[in-house]
Length: 290
Image 1 (cartoon, rainbow, N blue to C red):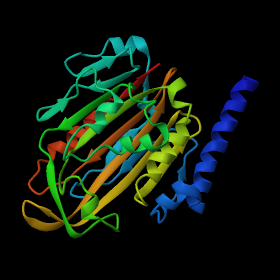
Image 2 (cartoon, rainbow, N blue to C red; image 1 turned 90 degrees about the vertical axis):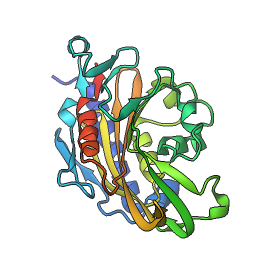
Image 3 (cartoon, rainbow, N blue to C red; image 1 turned 90 degrees about the horizontal axis):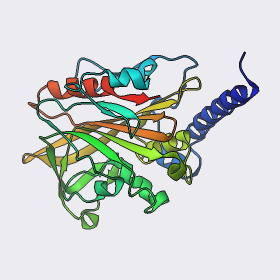
């Protein structure tokens, strides 16, 4: 029989998920104002499901099987090290990099996401508005496709419909990477500012109205979001064009940590479909160790 404590935990989780839906619908407050204009405001599922999100230039959607977010420690230890990287100390499993990809160094931390020059910085860094330096030493792992799409912003360029002020840019030419970034947040550190659901809502709000879908499950510790980031009137390889970046955020919880798994796909003319397939394989491989 379910204990009273577990009933309260489930009820609280359902209430929080409902609050996310209310906030998104009302578009109230700072995050609501940033979100605005959702294509699909909110989806709630009471049972674990397989989520499928389509992306441009691909005949196959990206999918996440939420029944497979977790793995027990003994099963994780049996995984083939040629295919998987088991990070017991951080509580999760990721794929080994495929051909054409590289993985970040073992000592990469949250503060390292700020240091790249002329590179699109992960949206994860925008949390610094709230957390200042308290997350600096939190561990990060990143799988990145080594061939970026280099974008030049010009007069009249926009991001999600908002004009780009060239005078505010440190670099007018920026490299955008297809990549998967995992931030493993110690709960004691994270909870000074956010719960699991607060992390998801804030991440979506940082995309200036680009959220297309949010899926949450009160019976499983995850939230999944899909967003679009539109770059209009920019130059790529000297040609004037528009680019639609696709991003997914999976927010999961382990015993001691919260995990933000951020996936970015940058479609480019002539790019191998293998890049898309690799991102799918990386999402399939990710597990939280229980």
